[in-house]
Length: 314
Image (cartoon, rainbow, N blue to C red; front, side, top):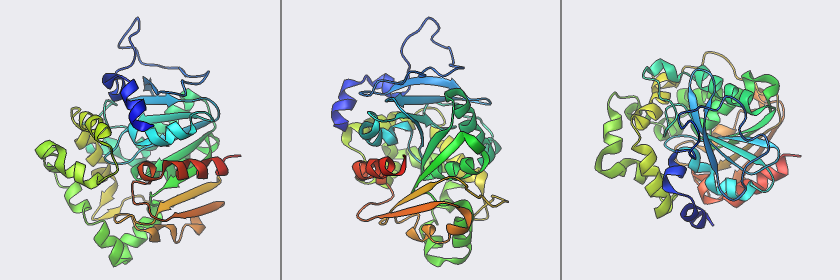
């Protein structure tokens, strides 16, 4: 199914070149998909969300789900899940700040969590809310904070292998297993480490995703990684939001909307212990352990992910 879809969509469209218009440089300022999107293939536009413009994919019609990717992905990390759900929902998947062809501010400080959340708030304002936020990895980090900060613009939250920053801070301070699993942070925050990541045809990044990508998908990922400053942009999320190995979030993130947490139990970087201790921060919490799935849960078991989302949203 995935490979058939990829073969049917032009490469440049998948990577971020919107269809030609009277003004090819135009940035959408109002919801371009108010009537929904094609369920069979993604539609892409640049959307002005305030401080930056984001490249955004839309697929399907119905209640709106905003899907937030993590590192080192881009909107296509959600393609298999989008294919599963496009007949029931309007699925909005942005390339977040710093990724693929979205805007990439130069300063590390431009990737602070509050600015990443503001981007998503601006996107929801364009789309009209409320929406369900779905976040994986760093996208989940943004989603946790957005569900705290954006009020009635978010009515439900789905988290996939993405730690709550307050729980994560405690684990990184006190749990040797999570400390060791996340020790790659030391490399990610080192200036110039992006050069290592792009070397040898992105061999570091390719190996980090293991078998999560098909050969066709890997071609598209390499195109996205090769966009100017795309890997630097992604690493700046770590550099801006961690200090001395700990998240520098200086407040508690309380979520007061129904929240579903899915965790691939074979995740070797973000350990399942991150599900422990969520209760004090989430008023309405459902957790699901996904056996046989790793960190790349959306790639490995998209049908299971889609079923859980369907069951969670009334």
